[in-house]
Length: 161
Image 1 (cartoon, one colour):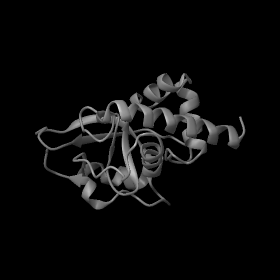
Image 2 (cartoon, helix red, strand yellow; image 1 turned 90 degrees about the vertical axis):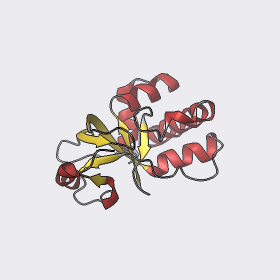
Image 3 (cartoon, helix red, strand yellow; image 1 turned 180 degrees about the vertical axis):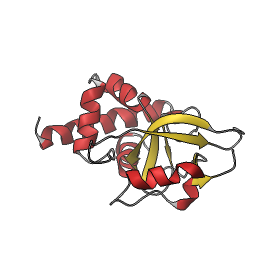
Image 4 (cartoon, helix red, strand yellow; image 1 turned 120 degrees about the horizontal axis):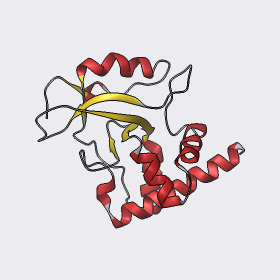
């Protein structure tokens, strides 16, 4: 596939995401329920493999092609040298009262913002969710983001939600 093909597929993924959001806005930004939540102005934290499976199912594309398109278009962040996109994190959110270990990926906020604005009927970007990451995982996240803008400091906490 060419970069143009990956860009076209990423646009198709945004279209189906926006259409699904229009039907059920809880698919995003509700910790413990949604496949992805906004963690700062630049990024969403998405559950893996749920994000790829949902986008693949909704667009009738294999999850492996979804992943490749999102990586090639810069929408999912990866960590060199192996271009790994998934990280294991301890997370919490308001009302949970404990930390939960998840496998997740970091997705550019613009990917979701465009999908919701153009196809989902949402005029403004989603606000920050209450999702947070345990402070002990911060060093690993910063290593993953080496050479890139890391998530904002308010993402991290020592206290369960």
